[in-house]
Length: 596
Image (cartoon, rainbow, N blue to C red; front, top):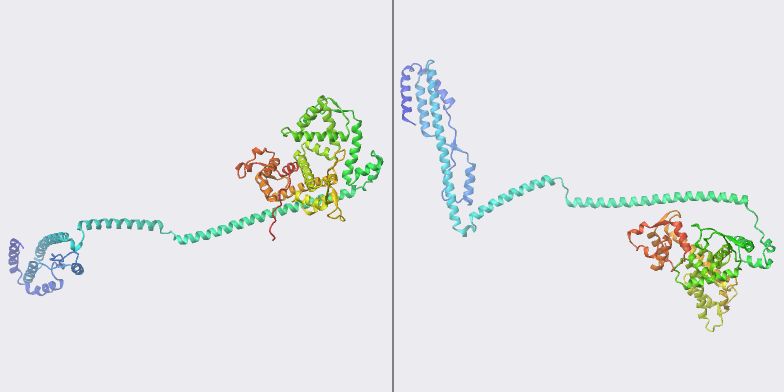
C-alpha cells in the first residue's frame, strides 16, 4: 500500500469525526449489524496456489505421478493478502465511529467508491504478479525437467533409449494413431452397412442353388411345352390322316372294281398262254399292268420308223438334243441288253471322270459314228418302255440321274464276291456245294443280315424245309442270266433285300433326326445321326454320304466342329431322296441299348 493514499484517508476521517459524534451512538449498532450481516465490502475469492516448484522429483516416476494426481484433485484457492485484511479492519473500525447523517451519506459513498476502485486496482496488480509467479514456476519446472532429461540421456543403462528418438517415435506413433483413427472412421462410414463375408457367401450359395433349381424347372417346363406342342401336332396330324383315310375309304368303296381277270391277256400277248404264264409268274397286279403295257408298247415301238427330235432345250438330256427326225433302228430286246452291257464294261474300264450321259453318247459315237443319234433315241425309247427288265430299268435310272451308277457297280461287285466265295468252297471245282456251305458263305458275306433274310436267300437258291445240309446245289446256276438279261430268283432276291435294307436304313436315320420331311436339317445333325445309327462308319464313307445328301464335293466338306457346318442346311425330304439315289448300306450293327 502506498503512504500518500494512507495519509489522505486519515485526514478525511479526522475532519468528519467531530461532525458525526452525535449520531454515532444511534448508528453504531446498525453499522455493526450491517458489516456483520453483509460481510466485507469486497469479499475476497478463495484461491490457493498449486503451482509450486518440485524438488528432486522425476517426471516419469510413480511417486511423481501420484503426487501430481493428488495435486490435481485439490481445490484451487489463494489466501487474501495480509495488508488488505488490515486495511479492511481499519476501515471497519473507523466507520463505526462515524456519524452517518443524511447530509454526509453521499460524500461517504463517494469516498467508499474511491476506496473500492483503489482496492480493485490493487487486486488486479496482485493478480498480474500472481500470474507472473505461475509462469516463473512453470519455467522453473520445465528447466528442471530438461535437466533431468539430460541426466537420463547421459545414463543409457537406466532407460536404454535416446529421448530424442523416443520423442520422435512418440510423435510418429501419435501421427499413426491419428491416421489410423481417421481410416477407422472412414471404414465405419463406408462399410457400416456391409454384411459379413460368411453371411454373404451363405446367401450367395443359397441364391445360386435357388437359381439352379429355377433354371432346371424352366428347362423342364420348356421340355414339357415342346412335348405338348408335339403331341398337339401329332394329334392334328392323326386327325388329318384319319379324315383322309376315311375319305379314301369312301372313295374306294364308291369306285372300287372287282379284281381283273388276267387270264384274258393270254390271247392278246404274243406267244400265247405259255408266254403269258412265264411273264405273269410271281408278279402282283401293278407289275402285271407294267408287263401288259410293255407288250403293247413293244408292238407300237416296232411299228415306228422314225422318232421326232426333241430339240436343244435345257431340260433335254445331252444325248437327245437334236432337231428333225431320227431313224428307229428297231433292235430286239436282246440286242439292247447286250449293247447296255457293253456300255457298262467300257465304263468300268475308265476312271469315270466324265458324266454318265456324256459318256453314253461318246460310246455311241465311237461305236456307230454318224448314226449315234439314231441309236441314242432308239435305246432311250426301249429302256423307257421295258421297266420290268433289270438291265434296262437300272440303266435308265442311272442315265436319267435317278440313281447313282455306284449302286449298279456295287451290286455287280457283291454278286461277283458271292460267286468267288462259293467257288473257293468248291474245292473239286465241280460247280456243286452243300446247303450248309451256302448258308456259311451267305453269313460270312453278309454278317449284318438277320437270320430270316439269310433264310429267304437260301429259299431263293433252292433250299426247302425238306432239304438237308448235305444236299448239293449247283451254285453257278444261281448267277446265270437269260438272253434278255433277266437274273435268277437268287440274284433278284438279293437286289430286293438291298432295296428294303436301304429303305429301313433311311427310315432309321429319319427317326434319329426326329424331324418332319419338310423341316430343314444341318450337316452336323446328319453327321451325328449317321454315327448314332451306324457307329462302324469310317470317315471316308461318312463323308461320301454327306457329300450326296448336301450335294457338295468331298473336298469342300467342312471338318467336324468347324463353324461353317451350321450354315449348310437342306430340306430333310431332299436329303433322303438324294441318299436313296446312291449306294448306302449299313457298315456295322447298331449298339444295343441297355435294358430299362
